[in-house]
Image (cartoon, rainbow, N blue to C red):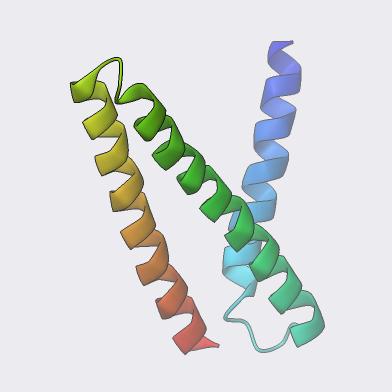
Length: 91
């Protein structure tokens, strides 16, 4: 099972990091860059929204853990928006 985890991690890292490197590259066609960017962006925002929802759900049981998860989700959301604006300006 450990090997499968490494394979999935490698593939996701290759896809996400490769897409982030390809986005500002003008030599790659827009038809490849834009859908890949949208796909990776939607994946990242889904993970961030999941963290925020988890923070809201756990808030009822443990206030400190809920606040920490919400703070983490908000920080990730702000950083993701900043990075998205930065990449769009480079395109």
